[in-house]
Structures are given as C-alpha cells and as structure tokens.
Length: 240
Image (cartoon, rainbow, N blue to C red; front, side):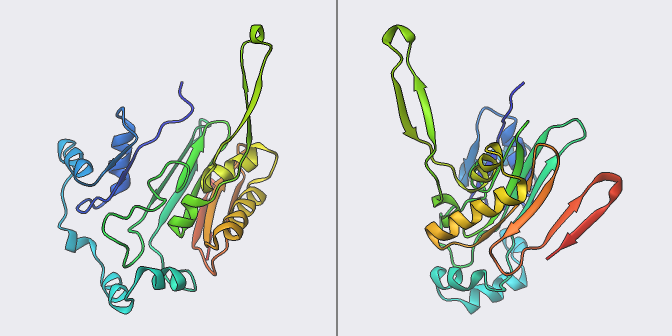
C-alpha cells in the first residue's frame, strides 16, 4: 500500500469546493492540475460550475477596495487581519493520516499567482506512520523556507562504497513532520518550523499538526489563528 498519495488544483475560478476537486485529482495519475485544465477536468467529472461572482463575498470586495497593492496587503495581512485559508489534519480510526488546505489567496495578488496551499509539502503534508500537517500564512514565505538535510547516496560495494551528500529542501508542512521524525513533539516541531520560516523570510504563518501517536498541536506566529480539534466522543475543543 502506498504511504503517500496527493491531489491538488490551483487557479480555478468557478468551483465552489476546490478541495473536493483536488480529491478527484488524487484518484488519477496526476498530482496537480491548474487553470483551464483543472476546469476542464471538473467538467469531465461532472462537478457543477458556479458563477465566479457568486464566490466573491462582500468582505472580499471591501478588502480589495481598501488596498491598492499586493505588497501592502502582505505587510498588513497578518496583523489582526482576516484570512480565508481553511485546513485540516486527520488521523482515522484505522490509523491512516489525511490532510488538506484550501484558500482564496491574498487580496490584490497578480493574475496567475499560485500560493502554497496546493503545493504538496507546502500547504499540507501527511504520511502514514509519520503524521499530518496543514499550514496557513504568507504563501511565498512558506514556499521559500527550507533547511538542508544530509542524504547518503551509497554506491555499490564493488565500487568501494562512495558516500556523497546532497541538500534536500523541505518546505513548511513537510519540515514540521521532518522535525517530528527527528524526535520533536508536534508542538515543538511546528514551532521550530514556523520560527525557522520567520527568521529566514520574515514571513508569518501557522500550523496544525498531528503526531504519529495522535497527539495534536497548533502553533502560529500571527496574532490569531482560529483552530478546532475533534476527538470522536470527546467532542470539539476550539480557540483563536
């Protein structure tokens, strides 16, 4: 059985629930479909189309009118400002992990801009036996953050076993799970990944994360990040 499967869409305009379409991509031989190709796939799969104007809220319109540039939005976006990213990290009853992240992006972004949410390992990542994480924040920062780790490439023993090293770039959600692989608890793993992103890029963000034993954490460097945890019969706990 595969440990990792992934599906994503980006730059879609007329889909009410893009994450449902992403799940359909997961069941194909592709990982990411964008723009016109993603819309065509949606039609082939019988996904109802929605007029783009019906997906734009009054708050979004006011937000667009209030700001005159993407950079200014980024500078002020996470200082008490609302954000529309929604993510989830799941551990099923039979021990499998799942995750997903969906967003409308950042106001005044350039046409064609794609953020972190649909990029595997950036906006979300999960792996059976390891855990699950979903991220929110400044997409460009989440995509940029990485830390070199050492991988051994061992050649055949007949060739005297030459060992080489290469840098492996780990983006935010995958980085948090990598931290857990190296002994950190979920809270510590998420906090370290976010602090690393902030120190390297100046970007703010947040993570929800589940460890291999089902332990849950939520960490953020922004002033607020609404979160909720559901543990079966234990019910729901939440905060901001």
